[in-house]
Length: 380
Image (cartoon, rainbow, N blue to C red; front, side, top):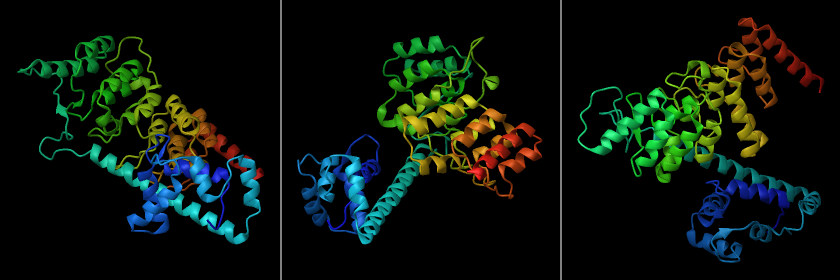
C-alpha cells in the first residue's frame, strides 16, 4: 500500500466496519465497505484481496491483519502517530480521503439499516391496524376465549394495566413459551407499558422471555401514537396510572431497553423527536441523565455523533431538545444538555434560539443559565 495510517486510525476504522456492533468485523461487513471504497463490482477481485488480508483464514478481520495490510506495526499508538507525522502531504491527503470515504459510507449504511428496521417494526395491517406477527388483546372487555393461551395473554396484559407487577412476574414463570408479541388497541405491547411505569425488574424478565429474533424489532417499534418504548420511559412519575401505592418509577428502564437492543439514537418517523426531546418535553432530568450517560460512557459515542444526537431537531418546528427545555424545564436539565454539547445558538423554524424561547416563556433563571454558558464560550 502506498500511504500509511496510524494504529489509532485503524482502531477507529475497525469500529466503523463493525456494522452490527457485536465487537467483530466479519468478511461480509468488510466487503460492503471495501467494495464501495474501491468502487469495485467484481467479487472475484475482492476475494483475491480478502485472501491477502485474512492471513489466518478465519473469515474475521483482526486489527493485526488490518495493520499488516496497511503496513502499520502494532507496537503502540504513539509510534503510529509518529509515523503519521512523517508522512508526505500527498500520503496524508490520501489517508484522510480514504478515512472520510469509509466513515461516510458507514454512516449512510447504518442510517439505512436503522430506518429499514424501524419501517419493518412499524408496518401495520390496513385491515386490523396490528403489526405483523402480533396478537391483538382487548383489555377490559368480556371476551370468551376458546383456548388457555388466549386467556393467558389477555390476563397478562390486564395485570400490567393495573400495575400488579409481582403477579405478572409470577405469571411469566407459569406461562413458559407464551407469546409476548401482543398489543392492545393503542398499539402498546407489554414492553411499552412496563417502560412507561418504570417496572425495571419485570421489564428485564419480559425481555429475557421474548424471542431474540423479534425482540430488537419490538424494542424499536412504536405504538399508534408513534411512541417507542424509550419514549414511554420518559413519562414522568406524576403522570403514571395503574401503579401500586407509593410506587417509585425506575428510570433505569432506559438502560435496560438499550442493553437489549433499543436504538438510543432512533428518531420518530412522524415528528423527528428523539428520546432526549421526550425527556425535555416532560422535564424529566432522570431520563435525560440516563440517556446521556449511555451515549457518552456505555456506547463511547464519538464527539461528532453525540453532537448530532443532542442537537437533532424535529421535522416541523426544527427545535432541538434544548429549545424545548428552554421553555418547559428548570435549570438543571438545561445545564445538563448544555454540558452534553447542546448548541445554544441553534435557530428553530421561526428563527428562535433556545435563549429567545426562555425569554418568551419568562424563564429568567433558565435564560440566565444559557447566557452564562454563551459568555463562557465566548471568553474561551
